[in-house]
Image (cartoon, rainbow, N blue to C red; front, top):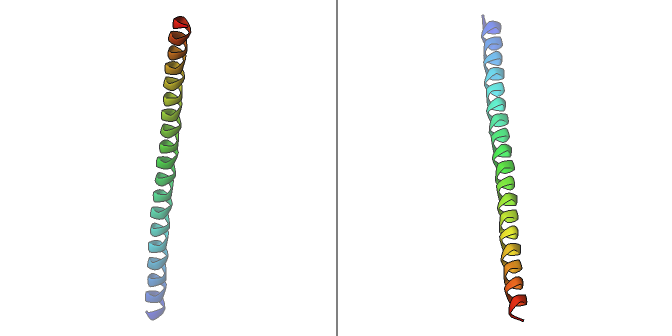
Length: 68
């Protein structure tokens, strides 16, 4: 009887450890996907800002060129 209870406790502990591992793995995967999305959005935002600045500078240069 004691041997069976010890086996069941061991099995229960293994299952708890597996669940803990799976939860940690899922949390890590979600974190990586959020980080990946955040990096993508930052890069996209930086590219949009760069295009706006280039467009603005081009317009300023054209207007300055027409005045001179």
